[in-house]
Length: 119
Image 1 (cartoon, rainbow, N blue to C red):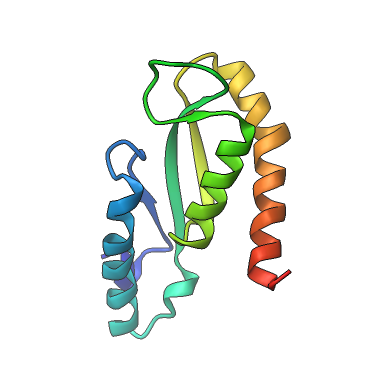
Image 2 (cartoon, rainbow, N blue to C red):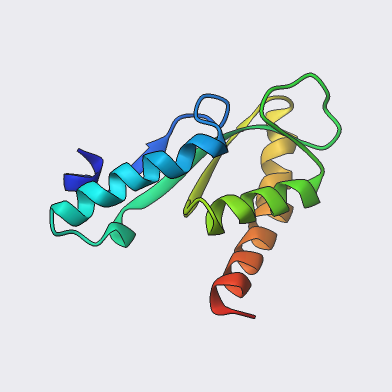
């Protein structure tokens, strides 16, 4: 359905569809889009990411410092094909959203743009 007619795919949380399961799901979407005469690149790919930025042991999902988040989300964008990430803070939501918006998002955008342009 997504490949044939949807504007995008919103993957469940990274703890329910871990990164190693994403390529096979992306392939299903791409094949269905191509079969329907659609360009698979026009379908948005959204990943719901639960976790915590910083030293927060015992919480689920992606946990680590800003650099780990930037490295991981950059990889998920470039390798797995996601163009949008939705943060689900596992702790301290106000602080987590502030860190994500101020430090992680700009760095990921910059690195993804550099990698995609060959810089």
